[in-house]
Image (tube, rainbow, N blue to C red; front, side, top):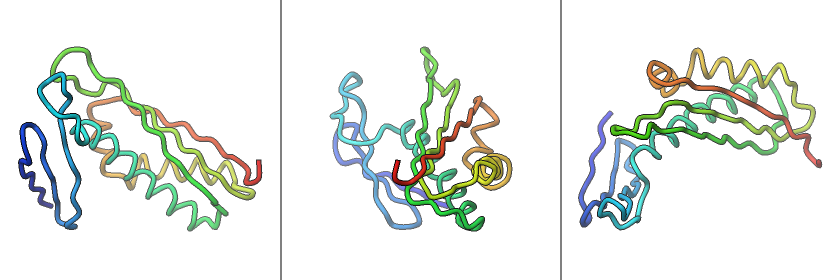
Length: 140
């Protein structure tokens, strides 16, 4: 896997990877940036959320759960001092559907956490990751 960042101006970059898609990165104005893109640590959190979201939704579909909408909310707490690493992460899955089984959701989250999501496996080595989930019956 390869990634390339190209400076646009100041502390602003355009990043691409093997897929060819681009994402804009920028720094906060408090450090001389223009507030014009994702912060690198935000992308780490988005990557974790995306990795586990794809796992959980795919597993729920294989379990023939009728999912009509799905969100993953990831919240990270950062250390006060540099390098301001994540000190804890909470991931909350919100599954909307018809008759979605709680055991299916719990197992899907567990499988993502323990077997399938490389982002979780990597981050779990250095930060505590907590998981929560909720089922919202469609039409409520």
